[in-house]
Length: 239
Image 1: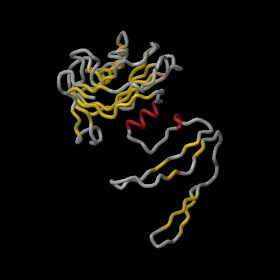
Image 2: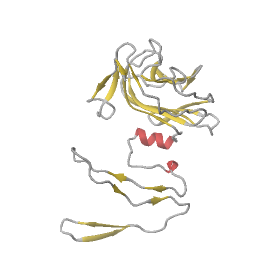
Image 3: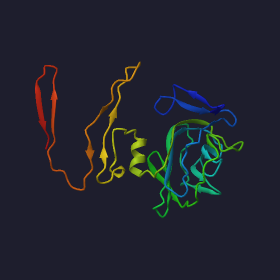
Image 4: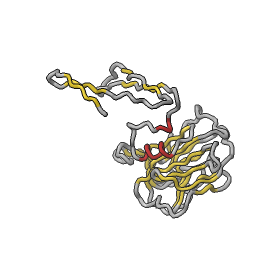
């Protein structure tokens, strides 16, 4: 549901639509009934944002209000969970341009909360608090007046795992055609299902060939074959 937030179809970091938060305490209320309990596990929060406001405590997302919540203000980003967990300072994050922001909790790292701005790591702190089951989930608001977001939020995601810096950089660069090596493990079987749509109805789903990750160097030289409009076969061998 929504409270005063406005969806704009001609904006967003890639002009495909985004939510604008300009009114007092404008926010979105998300359904959290199927949201997993995080506890002390890994997770990642990321979004594209645009703000030129000098307000402090601009909330991107509020989990259980501010338990935790993700904020920006001129010069920095921070997570609030009983106290401020801060990124580096001096960040140009409220200059009216689109920025990709993220924070990652990795329980296996010593400084286990990492901040990212436009694909670059901009601070690490320690955060070991357990996240209880959600009782509210707001976008652009943490439940307190004056701590709302002033600007536009796009592509907000909450992952139930910690993304690597390489994955964050791929998202920032919009490299949806790339699977970074840090996202794979040995003996995984990767396939892609494609369902065509002509604007009216779906066609038949087609599954790609499988790609299995292995723990060895593949020295096989790939051979690529294609067919021209004249139905002449060509083979290209790469070395």
